[in-house]
Amino acid sequence: MENKLFFVSNGAALEMSEQSYEAESCLQKIVEDNPHLLARAWGDNECRLFLIKRELEILETEDGSNSYSLDHLLVGEDGVPVLVEVKRSTDTRIRREVIGQMCDYACRACTWKVDKLRELFMENNSSEVDNDEFWAQVATNLKAEHLRLVFVADKIPDTLRVLIEFLDRNMAGIEVYGVEVRQYKTSDALLLSSSVIGNSLLDSKKTGQTA
Image 1 (cartoon, rainbow, N blue to C red):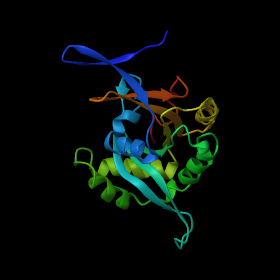
Image 2 (image 1 turned 60 degrees about the vertical axis):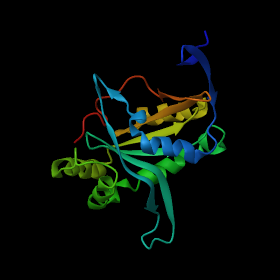
Image 3 (image 1 turned 90 degrees about the horizontal axis):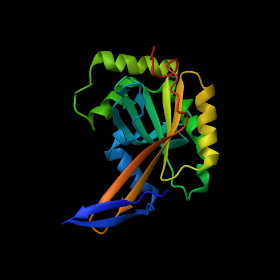
Image 4 (image 1 turned 90 degrees about the vertical axis):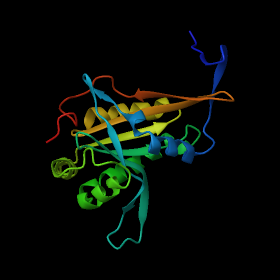
């Protein structure tokens, strides 16, 4: 049965229609401002997420002659780095190319300097979780390649979902999942829905228990 969404204004229920994102940058901005949309619960607890940097430059070569940009780098309150790639469902790269793109970023994470990440973090957050113990845990996770890889789209195709679930089952120490962030609008209101796409069972042997 199809569910419909309504926005109530002055007693009148106005049906909300799903709208596509005008550009990938629109969805990226939503994630930047609302990283909690990507949170995934571990047991009874939901790990809060904090933005470190949008469009994080990643050097492919030591001389900096070639570089890429990770859409978002977040960090969980448990000290696990979260790499995020955003694609619209209309982008053909969402099916296979985005997987290689994400792996290319993740394989370099162990070389990132925690002091620099901490500086970037403080540009976007309060000092709530900013302490030496927290960043020591981040450094430990980077070195051990304990990461979360998150694929965000308005709609995640089955071809990507199958790859996400395969990687999540088989990559020890790395959690992989997708999040669909859909938008519904009326002339006066915007509603977002966030749905986790991937394996339903969370393996406590992976990034849920950090080193």
